[in-house]
Image: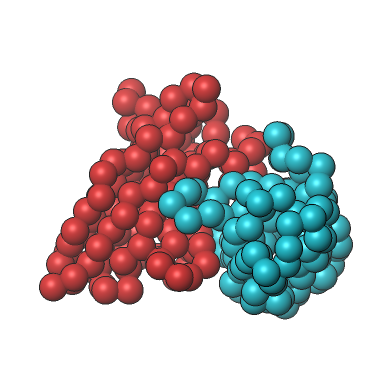
Length: 109
Length: 120
């Protein structure tokens, strides 16, 4: 099973700042099999990014993804109040065995 | 509009079986796989398995193999997920999800979730 390790566990930032979230895989997931999700309390997770860097429909361009192999990054430029949430990465290169990271909570400083 | 509507919350005793449903709207039912993911309180999501409603072929996570059964009723446009031998750590929100692409694993459209409580 591919293990995804997200860091930091919690990111304390102010609105308008940039958030940089990391996801490291225990084995290579190439450049096409990594997704990012946003999860807010009481809601289902929302797909933000797939194929490491492609924004899903309707996702604002302040969200961007990058990386390949074992190291991936989600960047949120100019944090808006609605961006404070938990973010998960997910790999889908190995099936069965899709796995998620442990999450990064982006909280208001 | 694509929608996945799940059945209501369940309370079960340890050792019991739970079966929940996921009815889809807004697209051709057998054109896309349906995935199931669960999320325990305070934990990250966990993929359980998927079904191809077109032919009923399933794929399960090794972690749930033998305890989970996913089925589809094409005439009803509904997918079912059954989890047996329930334990307290099966307490979680369970989601059905339509992927972004036909055979994809990008989990795009999520149902509202079914919360299962396992308690004696």
